[in-house]
Length: 341
Image (cartoon, rainbow, N blue to C red; front, top):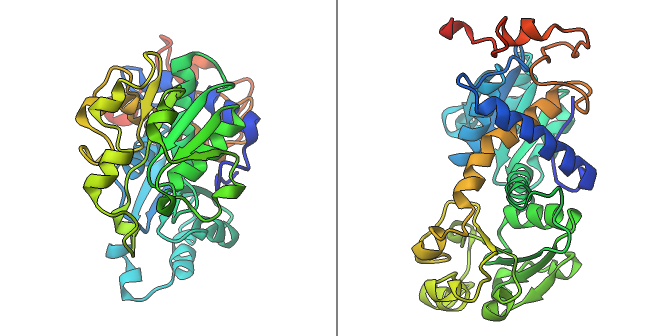
């Protein structure tokens, strides 16, 4: 079993491998009964110490489509509200013999620490301001498939907004540059991280100038809940200077693409005109979430992911002599789960 704790550990080949595996999961998800027995007998714990909607729901849907058992966990309704530590919570769950943890936490590094306490797979679903690897995977998958090419070589990505507090930005910078893109960060100096000079990016503060050469405009959310001080004068001024407004749509090339990780605050960092523009990939990003996370779970839990087929994999290592009819049914259709038989 494998962990997915950050993007950097994958490299370009790992990113492309997971994108290819996601193609297979898109096919599984498009079936009349979108199920595969690949993770039957496995147990995945949805372990969210921080609120989430898109990531949590898509991971739980992904696990169920692969026939895994899913255990839900939230710190507010657990013994942690009585003072139990993260480690003791994990030890308690581990005693139930689970196979994977999908972990989100408001503190950076917690998924890495949990990986040292358990032999189960640990998948980082967002930790503090450090990283959000599956968001970067689904974003780069969405973009490469829209462009119909495996990499992003020669592409200019303009990432605008609150980079300082964004784990999505950090993971996407790593993923997009690994795939060959050039990334320019645009935002007020107060919303750029202190360590930005060490990032493999260019930095600017004039959004209008950056948009003229952008192939992709990636808009980040203003994370006011993470700000403990006044980092921008007013929200109105931020929108005027760094928001993707209706006026700025005219500065972007006809073949460019617009992206946002959600949740969007319309009228602040992005206008409704931009969110709903034909060049927007925002809905496609959401649609890529479940198959991307199916690919990650399969990659993490199934031995030899380079050669394994999600329709033939089960709790044990995949067998090369598995009869396809036994897996997909006598008529070549996927075997329905018991409740549909």
